[in-house]
Image (spheres, rainbow, N blue to C red):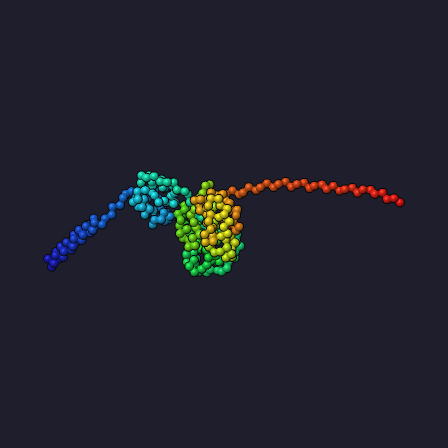
Amino acid sequence: MTHDILIAVLILGALGVLFAVVLYIVAQKFKVVEDPLIDEVAEVLPGANCGGCGKAGCRAFAEACVAQGNMEGLRCAPGGDAVAAKVAELLGCAVAQGEPQVAVVRCNPANCGEKRKSNYDGLRSCAFQATVYTGEGGCPFGCLGCGDCVAACQFDAIHMGANGVPVVDEEKCTACGACAKACPRRIIELRPKGKMNRRVYVSCVNKEKGAEARKSCGNACIGCGKCEKACPFDAVHVTDNVAYIDPTKCKSCRKCVVECPTGAIHDVNFPAPAKKPEAPKPAPEKLEVPVAEKVEVKQ
């Protein structure tokens, strides 16, 4: 009996040693040596894991930076230039200063006077609603108002406005792009903040022809092309019945804003135009009443 137990123990011990050797060989063969610089880069990142950089998270962004050896084509939106400078210092490379961006909502049904054409009583999700429903306002391109963008934002920078369309808080927005990715209608776009936070953009994405677009929204772009003709910098073009302003060409002259007949083009953070002084009204001319001549009547 004792002999059998001893044999079993020896066999189990031999198997344990054998498996340990096999595991060691496999571990050595397939081991991955991670650069400690990855941890250093990851520490200076904000840790939001928002995906604004195009990577799976901050750790993946750090790995990409270290593997590449520089930050060309890589940018942490929440961290901005400050974090970019720290990462560049760790990598020992130079980094170009990026132009600050902000999320812009390209839908504005506030003053169009539209009424609900139908009532939606289903799952409150823009992603789901976009697959089965046009929208309560009837615009097949406009905001659905369920707030998927609000739920996606980790910085409390976007909220639903009184008109059912999201409003972006410029001070909190980090341009991570999470809200833009969450919007199934693609009405949210990242655009440069512009000098003094001033920018001009078309707040409409409706590709229907003018008459049809106006049926859904009085503020819709009708693709008339007046803005395109008015722009002296070739920054505005009408494609698929809707105008778009190229932020890299726009000089904020606002001539397109004046020409737009529907108010679809917005100028943000510009001072109100000065009112022209009213010309003084001319004094009323005095009318001279001719004195009737006396006529002598001979009797």
